[in-house]
Image (cartoon, rainbow over all chains, first blue to last red):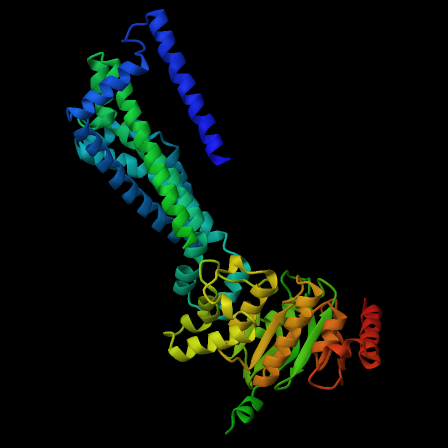
Length: 247
Length: 255
């Protein structure tokens, strides 16, 4: 049944690409405006084989890794602290929300001024984007613990640390991991957008460079790579999440 | 001093206890209750009459606004190590296996020793769960989960067990099996029990004493003089029916 649904999903993709290819060829659309999928595949293959893409892929991967690690950790720890302290929550939560309303892209030029050009401003941007889903999900998890289980821990004379470590965090883990999953998707957006503005290396910077040299097939090839990396990381995390929660 | 003699000093007393969640609305009014060692005391009443609140007060989970709760001749402020509590739902931790759930009360305070592990296994075996040591709670039926919750409450050999309608959601046969298991284990360890139920038959079968509650008050306490140990056949005896009728009448009068 599952393989049948995969077949139909794949078929939709094949039909879409074939239609695209046929339309571009029959209409004679310029490569500058809309390259054919076969041309994009050709550029993608060549730039992978000749090693042109790899440093950029590596740069973006590094930025996504550090961005999600820093943003995720800060979001998680911040969520635990705010979830545990009603006082801090009412004091700081409005400012946290306020900080998220500001468009991150608008902050990019400021980050270049503060952190220079390169990896750091992009990592900061990515971390900032990853921070909020983790914080929000962790705060919610901390507050949604089964009241009867909290009473059980009180009955068992567990202290605050034990209640947090042995009850609140494990019971909130599905929500926290879902936050990580959302953050992971957003991390790719953060890294690529960060590179648009503040970097000369990485997949985002490569899109801007390709635009400058009017190399539309390369732009599409980079988009394919970003999509592939985004989906792969999402699936990998989802698999890890399932195994972790089942163990 | 033998263990039974040392337990004889443990006694729960509630004196003129009143409690309210909201100001001006008294959930419990002027409650007086004594629990002797080894006694099985049932609190019987309709939903919302304050049974669970009384149970939590007696266990130290809630604090009385008036009156006092005395445990082992000391005012009770917080739950004590020699108390166990079984909630209405099993409240098992889904991320731990059955054995770790049972050992949780010990694991929170000290390192698990071989004797603890042995005791947990014995309790689970007694409860018919020998083949489920490493299963997850989600793989168990409702009755099996309740058994694990009882084993968890008994792992520290408490002097008193507070039970809040633990069998309410189970089918009749599983409920009867669990009642039987519970009575056997508690009689063996001389454990006192304060048991909340809305089921008259359950109260008569389990209790030495049954207190009928309504509108936050204990209106009537009836000693149940049925022979021990209780047998399933007693459920249809004239004496059993007599006590059931008396309790039903008491509940109707105070309703």
